[in-house]
Amino acid sequence: MHGYRIQRAGEHHLDGARAVMLDTIHRDFGTGYVPRWHGDVIDPAAAYLRSPRHLLLVLSLIHS
Image (cartoon, rainbow, N blue to C red; front, side, top):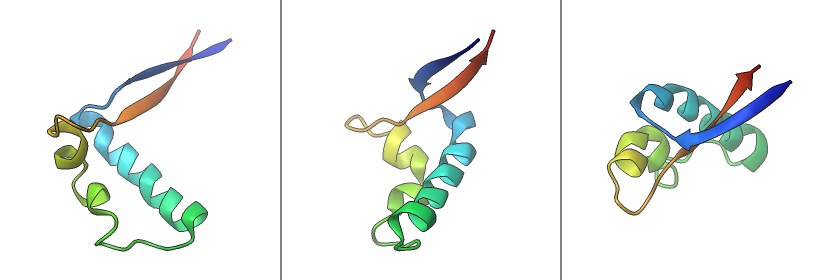
């Protein structure tokens, strides 16, 4: 059986999170990457890790 763990993102999650964000922007939003709209994708550490008002959560699959 598999479970999931939701946790606050750390520096080591940012490359994977950026890849998911870019895939979502291109595949689901249909807008493509627009720098003035997607500054958080360029610098997710500033947008989510160092901002006291925002956070980024990641989901991990747990194999049991």
